[in-house]
Amino acid sequence: MSSVDEFTLIDLLNGGKQTIAFQRAGGVETGIGDDAAVVRASSDSRWILTCDTMTEDIHFKRVTMRDADVGYKAMASAVSDIAAMGGTPRYALVALSMPKSTPVERVRAMYDGLYECANRYRVVVTGGDTTSCIGGVTLTVTVIGETEPDKALLRSAARLGDAVFITGFTGDSAAGLEWLLGKNKPSEEWDTDPELKRYPGLIRAHCRPEPQIEAGELLRRSGFCHALNDVSDGIASEAWEIAVASNIGIDLIEDRIPVSGELLDYASRQGKASLDYMLYGGEDYQLIGTAPAEHAVELQMQFKEAGLPLYLIGYVHGKHSGVRLVRSDGSAVPLAKRGYNHFTG
Ligand SMILES: Nc1ncnc2c1ncn2[C@@H]1O[C@H](COP(=O)(O)OP(=O)(O)OP(=O)(O)O)[C@@H](O)[C@H]1O
Ligand SMILES: Cc1ncc(C[n+]2csc(CCOP(=O)(O)O)c2C)c(N)n1
Ligand SMILES: [Mg+2]
Ligand SMILES: [Mg+2]
Ligand SMILES: [Mg+2]
Image 1 (cartoon, rainbow, N blue to C red):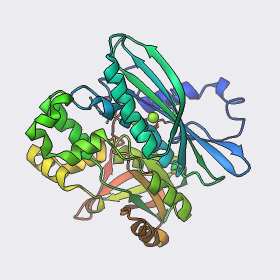
Image 2: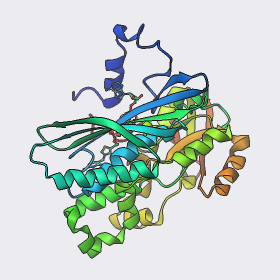
Image 3: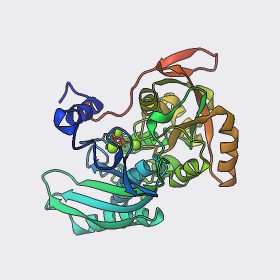
């Protein structure tokens, strides 16, 4: 596996001859390659299908998340892919694998968190599967959402002349993770550790991310949004996905990318650049997308009226040339397609 990165592996597994004829028929309007698939439900409705997995020691440890956070975030990260299509989440299936020795209280706490998130985003859990396993806990959440025909917001829809937007702060989750790993305190002891309370926003961003369903629905209804993606692997990686899928280039303007006060404080104390957490950290679950520049301010007004932020952070230009970062001095530097990748570190 060491010679194949995560995205190459997905292409490899799904590009074979046997996939072509049958798999691409049957009412599938958007197949593998976007945040979620879009399939025909009826003449006036489309289902949006997605699943995401959280695995112990890869996505969480006992020192980075409480059990209830694990359940909450497993649901939230899957719901986020529905937001990334501009859809409305409806149903979920939950697959749970855990060692035989797992205390029932631990599972109970995970499910409390999972249902807290499901209730908040109005998702009905309709089933799932449970197995034992060797090793840590794994939770896989499949979410089914809904949208109208031709309304799904795809990564491939960015156009020359679009502005690039983001719905909120990024980098906080990665900084929260680093802070918690550095402290290495069992999550049961967090409440009694006064030092851990220094960055509540960073911890919340990591443990209780907020999938941007309301923002995604607003983007869909506005009719202005072209491309959309959620930020699971860092802004750089997600902007690259839009650039490649849409065959365009993206310039991100460094000074326009919003940064939280806690991240600024944390990064400066670590002697690190906050931008590194924002561009390459991941697990933020904000939405990054594009809309025609002439409608961008109107879109921002609609967000303001709804009480939601929307930041304009760049623009789409010419032919495909990847993603660049425009620095304060006006220079543009190419951004590597770096971010979280399961098989390359
Ligand atoms: N094992 C697999 N078999 C078939 N399709 C897959 C598999 N893994 C991923 N995919 C598909 O590949 C595409 C990209 O998946 P990926 O997981 O990178 O997207 P994402 O869920 O938006 O990102 P993240 O998992 O980082 O949140 C999606 O359309 C997904 O359904
Ligand atoms: C203990 C621990 N170590 C590292 C990380 C960081 N991490 C794991 S998966 C991922 C990307 C999103 O996942 P996916 O692509 O599977 O949706 C990131 C940034 C973590 N959360 N916990
Ligand atoms: Mg996604
Ligand atoms: Mg995924
Ligand atoms: Mg990923």
